[in-house]
Length: 527
Image 1: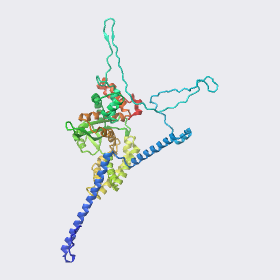
Image 2 (image 1 turned 120 degrees about the vertical axis):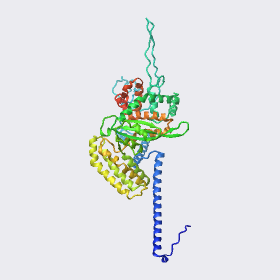
Image 3 (image 1 turned 45 degrees about the horizontal axis):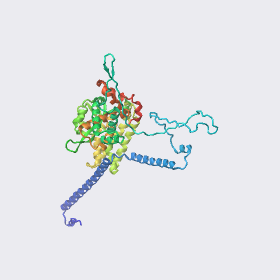
Image 4 (image 1 turned 45 degrees about the vertical axis):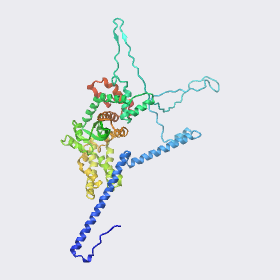
C-alpha cells in the first residue's frame, strides 16, 4: 500500500505559505516528468541497442524492401520447384508447345567457354527397317545437357633427358623449370586454389585438408600453411606495387573492420584491424584501373592511418573515426563525409521504434540517392552541375530541418545524437556537391570489406599478427581482380606461374588490369 503525504488545510495557510506549497508541488511535478522522460528515453535506447545486437548476432538485416524481395524470391523458388516436380510426376510427358507455354522465357544457350564432350548416338538399325535399303546421312538433331564433373587433381611428370656428347662425353640437360615455391610439390594452380579457398571461399586450411582427403590426396594442414606463407612472401613486391597505384589516386575511399587475432601465449584473442583503401573512379567515367589495398594493424590507433596515407594527397572519403583527424590537419588531405553513415543512424532509429523524425530523414536522404542514380557514369563536370542545381537545395533544406527539429528534442535522445552527428560534419557532407569526382557515400569501401566479414565467421580468429598481414595481402589482390572483372583464382594462377622468374623492376606487369586481356576467357566466371 502506498502512503501519501496529507495535504495541509489550505484555509489555515497564509499567502506566503500557500505560495511555498504551490512552488514545492510544481517542483515535484517537474521532477516526476523528467523521470518519466528519462525512462522513455532509456526504453528507446534499449530498443535501439537490442535491434543492433540482433543484427550483429544474426548477420546484417536487409532493409524492408530488400527483405520483401528476398521473401518473394523464396516463394518463387518454391512455386517453380513444385511445378517441376508436378511435371516430372505426370504420367504422360507434356507436348513441346505445352512446355513452351508454361515457361516465361526461352532457355538461354549454355556458355560457350565450357568444354564440350560429344557423344554420337547411332541408330540400332544398320538398314532400313521397312525395305532393308542402305542408310545414308540426311541430317541430325543436336541437344545439350549441362553436367557437373567434380574437380580433380593431376600429376605433371617433368622428364629431363640427359644427353652426352659422343666425342667428349659432356653431359647436356635442360634446366629444371622454376616453381612458385622452390622444391615445393604444389603447382601454381593448386596454390591459387588453396589461397582462394581460404581467403575468397572462406575455407580454413583444416577443412580443405578434409575435403582433399575424400579424393584420396593427403595434404597436411601444416604443409598447406607453408604454401600460404611462401606465396605471401612471393607476392610481396606485387602487393607493394598495388599499394603505390592505390595511393597515387586523387580520391580514396577508406574504412576498417575488427578481426579477432590470437594473442601469443595467452590462449585468448585480441582485436586487430583490417583497413581498406579503394581507388575506383569509374562512377564518373574515368578509365584508371580500380584497385583496393588492405593493411593490417594490431590495434586501431590513429598513427596507423597516418602511416598508411603518408604519400597520399587528395580527398579521403571515410566515416567519422577520430583517427582520421590528424590526416586532415595540414590540409594535404581533404575530408569527404559519408551520407550512408548519416542515413544508417536514422535507419537504426526507425527500425527500433518507428520514429517519425527518422522516417522523414530517410525520405529526404532517399531523394538525394535518386539523383545519384541518374548521374552515375556521367562526367565529373556534369555531376557537379546537376548536384549544385538539384542536390544542394535538398541538402540546405535538410540542414534547416535538422536545426529546427533539434530544438524540439531532448538533448539526451538518440535522435538528437543522430542529428548532431550529421551537423557536426556538414561541410564534409556537402563536399560531394562541389566535386564531381566524389561520391555521396563511402559504400565503395564498405563493399570491399564483405569478404573479410564473411571470412571472419568461418575463421573465428587469425593465428597471429603475421596471419593478419598475410590476409591483408591476399584480400587486396583478390579484391582488385574482382574489381577488374577477373576470376581471382585464374588471376592468381597466372601470377604464381610467372612471378618467380619475373623481373622485379617490371612487377607492375602482373597487376590484374595488365593481365586482363590474357585472362579474358575467364572473365565470365569472375567471382
